[in-house]
Length: 233
Image (tube, rainbow, N blue to C red; front, side, top):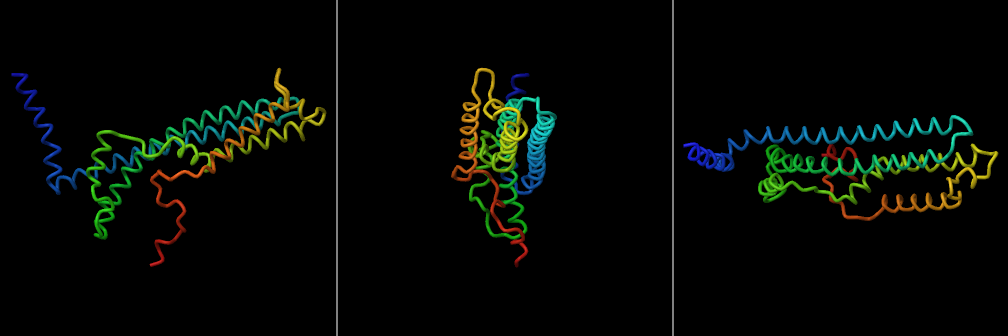
């Protein structure tokens, strides 16, 4: 009896979704719950990104305070800060990809349901239901790791890395007048010139990544639009 009950339950489960898909009223009743859930997921993902950025800025501020507290504090502490910022950036890249995945689902409902309900002009995507259904069954990131990396560098981490670079240059020159800059920049067993060369290569790589011309995949239509265009008409 239990086996028969389980098989009937399985068939019933399979038919529930199909009945909703074929009933417009039932679909429209269920869709707002899905929409609110995805908005909540996107909001949570955005909050996680913001918290990571806050920790990165706080760490950098504390590190600068320590390094410039006195001439005896070594400049290599700023190099440790670079490593910490790179770690935070790696976290943000992955979190941004999750955020964009949830945001893409929110936008596909906005474009094809709510926008069309306000002004019927046809769905933005001809097969948006199939596309959304496929993504719910097999979730995938919508933006590559490279694009997520370049976007976070352009928005915040490029500036943070730049602050560390300027602070390091100032520390080994202006704030250690009793030593040559090569002596202030050196690490145990590593000459200061080599340290400076490695830092230069690092910043060239950061700059190249930040301006790398890649095709945009992130779901962000407002990028590059002039503010206020929606009011022109």
